[in-house]
Length: 308
Image (tube, rainbow, N blue to C red; front, side, top):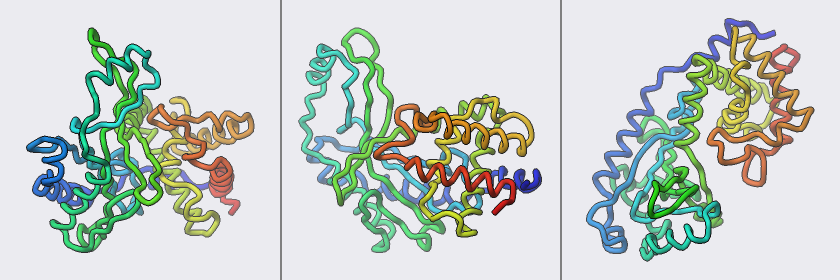
């Protein structure tokens, strides 16, 4: 079995300073060049209310030494937001549309173009326009950055005149090549992971880093393909373990984690796993393929006991 010493090394968080520089430079670029004249005129505002923040492994504190790309969110707020009112009553829906008639002519495509032009003005022609994000190469920021332009998304649970409205905050953007709508809840993901990490005295995020290192080892040995298990999928899968799984030594934690994963594969519970945002299922049309998760689990167990 892989030694406790190696597992301890894999569990440790690397020193991450380069992502901070990337984040600060992107923030400076957008504060300098947004809003554009199009945003001002179409949204009838003099300044845009947008937030720039980190998403993914760096934001969640689950990065490993080999992680490279940093994910940065640029979220447009208030001016135009996306919404889900499926859980509201018809009366609440009518009230919502009365208060928010959505008359703005400013679109997601326009916002993404504005963010792109702002970054290109600041960083130069190396900034690339990709279907899901805007890409800044590593030789520009010392680390490659994926910048996701998005609107605020609100998944409403209540909407009335007389009580505080309640919604789950998220983000929405489009694949500008296929027009696929993408809704995610990065702040909920981070909030829930932080809470679980506190409950497990830091061992939850340690376990995530260990399993990400298993993934790295499996890919380096050619035992799984590059896209079998993403860091995001692994993080969400490990989130489904109970707090008791993360007690004891790192050897104990990996053994108990492997056991709960294989048990849930056998009893069919794996297909019901939630993402850490607790809004989406991990497996499904837009999620992880269960057959790939199964391959990752079995290969990880084999590597744990050094059978591969």
